[in-house]
Image: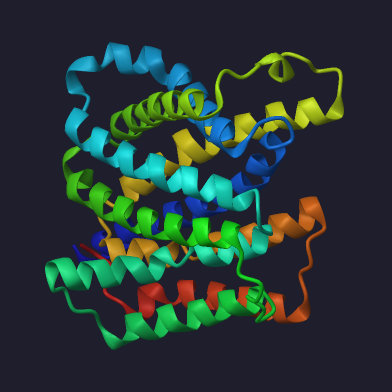
Length: 297
């Protein structure tokens, strides 16, 4: 029995790592969409396209949709994504990846304050070593804190709240239906917000394949709508059926490693020896989660 529980938890652990890989690639997709769209419209269209894509599935299963949970999760996710998208437009990918993962610190602190839950010393050690690793990824330089960095930090707090909201309903819902409805609702909130804030927007860049830049914009929305929104968030909800939120947030620290790697691969952002050492430290810390923490619910 213990072996089956371990294998099940390892599967959820691996799915979380896959989700962080996709979200790391999502930073690149966001940058591509910003070639033609503002951060507000990029975020809105991302989830709108995702919602349109899954609308037939939602209609066929309309009697089983967890409306209440998806609604509250969508509200928090919309706030988090909007703050993050604005931040990404005004800072580097590596720096945005570093500040975003502060949700790994906010999540246990919120759990501690709200639910009085205590954590093992091994957990705090892995969290501290991971944050040091992420600090190294930024070459120990977080000077010139700007407005974009502030938005990213606020989004990290909102993501921590979203992890806790998902944890409340994860055990009771179908991950596909929950996330598909969540994405559709975020698309609705995003469209309304973008229209009120900036007015209508042209979709012509999405049907014009003549320029390389437009092709990247289209590819960016494919990455964000299908992979980052529909696939990765579904993996998160499925994994949270068997993992406590503080361990989920610790696993998500791998997102910063992938963000730094993709920033280097696609945009030639610097990845120094110190940054590589930081990546190794984060990977090692996350890999040790099964050894030094109790990560089953």
